[in-house]
Amino acid sequence: ALATLHYASYVVVILSRGLLRDPCFAKIMMAVFSHKANSGNPRSMTRSMSSRASERDLNLVTVIADTRFEFPGADFYGEISVYGLGMGREFGQKLEKIYRYLLQLLALPLTP
Image (cartoon, rainbow, N blue to C red; front, side):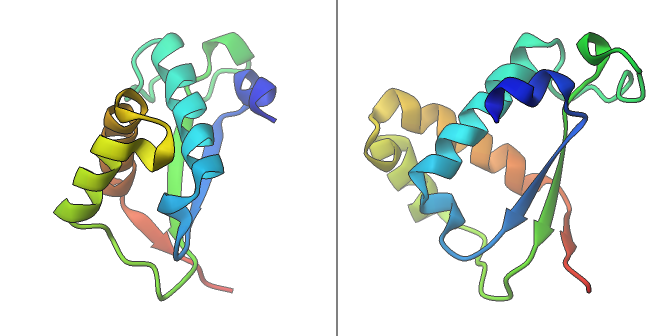
């Protein structure tokens, strides 16, 4: 699935309880942000409508799908930074930055 990032225009993150503690999700977010960093300005959206995959920016959209989802506090970020969900401090420090960026995006409510 991660190999298809070059063809994607959007990554939709469905925020639910426990998601931020899932090592698989953490690895996916690490790959997404690595792709964004390697494809130019990770915050730029100026080329998002291009028809050529190599010129498209990857945009992130967050959706709150679980009313029990809680935005993390300082303790959570500290724990992630030190332990990195069991993957080490270097991974954890990068993950903390990714989660902080991800959770500053306006999350849309899920409506049927």
